[in-house]
Each structure stands twice: as C-alpha cells, then as structure tokens.
Amino acid sequence: MITRIVRIEEKNPNPPEMKELGEIIKRGGLVAFPTETVYGLGGDALNPESSKKIYAAKGRPSDNPLIVHIAREEDLDALVSEIPENAKLLSDAFWPGPLTMILKKSPLVPTETTGGLDTVAVRFPSHRTAQELIKAGGGYIAAPSANLSGKPSPTLAKYVLEDLDGRVDAIIDGGDIPIGLESTIVDLTGDVPMILRPGYITKKMLESVLGEVKTDPTILDANSKERPKAPGMRYRHYAPKGELTIVEGSREDVIDYINRALSDAGEADLKTGVIATNETAAFYCADIVKKAGNRNAPEETAASLYRILREFDDENVEVIYSESFQEDGIGDAVMNRLLKAAGHKKIVL
Ligand code: TXA
Ligand code: MG
Image 1 (cartoon, rainbow, N blue to C red):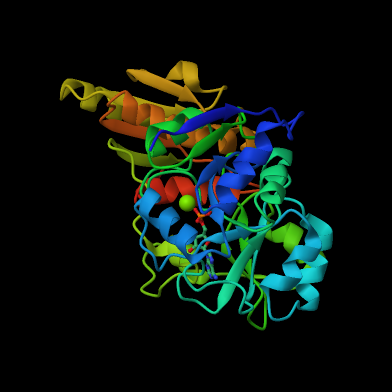
Image 2 (image 1 turned 90 degrees about the horizontal axis):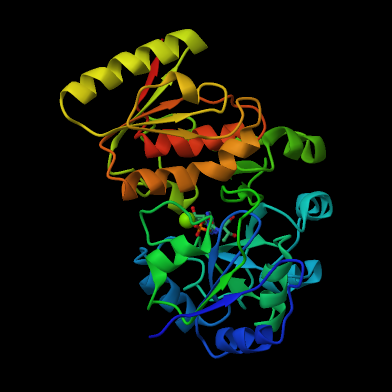
C-alpha cells in the first residue's frame, strides 16, 4: 500500500481533499490525523473490518479497545445505551476537548471496536481538522494513537510516517500537536467516576464538575498486583532503548547526582543523555542534553516528552537520566508517562 500524505492546516481544516479522505474511511480504509492530544490512526468505528485493520496496522492486541471519536455532541446518543447525568455535565464542561468517557455501549458499536467489552470509550476532539475528517468519514472514527504498539504516541506527522508508512492509506500532516499527551480517560459506568488515565483534564477539573472522583489505584502504585481498568494501561508500555532513570530532589542535589552518574557512564564508554529543563540544561555534562521546557510550565514538558524519547532512540543513547517534574496540572500525566517509560525507576535523594 502506498501511503498518501496530505498537509492540512488547522486554520483551513476543510480543503477539497477532505472529501476524498472521508471516502477512504467510509470504504473501510485507514487515515491518520492530528488531534489536540496526539496523532490518531482512524478507521470507521462502526465497521468491524476497519477496527481489525487498525489492530493489524498498529501491531496491537485486539483485546485492547479503541476510542470512538465524534464531531457533534448529539452523536453520543447512538453509541451508548444510556447517558448518565455525569456524562452530560462532563460533555458540557470539557467537550470538545481532551477528555474520553467510558459508557455502556449500544448494539450499534461492534465488539471488535471495544475489544470485546460492553462499554465504549468516546471522545469529541477539539482539533478542527480531526472534526472535519470525522464528519467527512461518516461521524464515528475509531482511533488509537498513530504509533506502532510499544512506541511513544506521535506528536509530529514524521513519526506517524516512520511507524505507519505502507500500513495506512493516508496521513494528514497537521504540524505540531498542542498538548502532546493522550486524553484523560474517565470511567462513568461505576458508582463513583474513576480516572483510568491522567491527562490534560485533571482530577481537580473533573471534581469541580462532578464532586467525588477516584483514580484507578493500579496506575498510582507501581507494585499493584491488580489489573488496570483501561486494558491499554496494563500492556508493557513504551520504554526507550537506553536505560532511563528519574532523579528527584533539590535542584543542586539532582544536578550533582546525575553528573556523577554521567561521568561513570562516560568512563564505561556509554552514550549518555539527560532530560532537563530550560533552567538546568546548561549544568549537565551528558553527550546530549534535551530541554523539556520551563520548570514551571508542565504543559511545555508534556508537549516535548514523546519527541525527546523518540530522539534519544534515534541517537542511540544508552543511558538516560531525567529530572522529576511537578505533579500539578498536566504534570501529573507527564510523571505518569515518564515513570512508565522508566519502568518506575526513580531515585529520591
Ligand atoms: O488522546 C487520545 O485519547 C488519543 C487520540 C488519538 O484521541 N487516543 C488514544 O487511544 O490514546 P489509545 O488507543 O492509544 O488509548 C486508548 C486507551 C487504551 O488504554 C484503552 O485500553 C482504553 O483507552 N480504553 C478504550 N476503551 C475502553 C473501555 N471501554 N474501557 C476501558 N478502557 C478503555
Ligand atoms: Mg496509545
């Protein structure tokens, strides 16, 4: 299959090519597209064959369900058996945007799309190009992140191409992605709403609308023997080729510790890298030092984290140290993804 690449700017999200891209989806084909969180790998959510193709293209286990993307709030009705009050409150507050809700599915949604579950994940993205593709493609697009299973979610079209060239019909290159980490997932099928994956919409924001909100305890505890409720969170997640360690402590202690560890690694002839901030980058003596934005701007770290991890792989860095980041706002999601990438290896000084 030859993968076609179409450049579409969000400020002009509905060029003439969009109709053809929608036709590809309607015919059962696959189109990767930008969203405000990460690039998605889209197919017709109501067509079981499309969902099977998505799993095959990603190399993903078929018991790991897909998120159904819609472009009009009223399209939620057909996907779910009932809309609880909490879902109305959340959609009013945060849709369109980086929030995915888990609800009881209707018979319209094939179990191929939900990985065999009787619930469905639904998201109404705010990215205008995503919205136009969803509308052109018939209204319901199933889309996991557009990476090969086991790699970081792509935040640039070049990474989508690297992973999916020849595996999808088309890729929409929409340039940079504003957020850079996947959507918050909240399960509304239990008594108390539960966060299954942290993201840009934080627990505090959800609580301000819903009152009590829990977090799936298995994603907070690295040693938990229980299975996370979002099947995707239980698969071994992306780990860089290099050995990644997070170091937490006062600024001076962290710089000191990492520099000593770097000099040991250097003596052993290993290629070294550091994930630092704008304020601290100059103090490290690694082969490659990456800046993950300003220390007090977790959204800048979110937007650069996956790109940095991919670059370290391309540069064959063997030993990586990362500073630890504040866990407020999207910083919570940043640390969730970073800890996973590090296999939970964190040194607290
Ligand atoms: O920001 C995002 O959510 C991106 C963009 C493309 O929209 N999509 C994304 O999809 O991250 P994916 O497939 O990479 O992650 C979906 C996660 C997986 O962990 C999956 O297990 C979980 O959502 N999930 C999907 N349906 C579910 C369900 N019915 N119950 C529990 N978890 C579900
Ligand atoms: Mg993913």
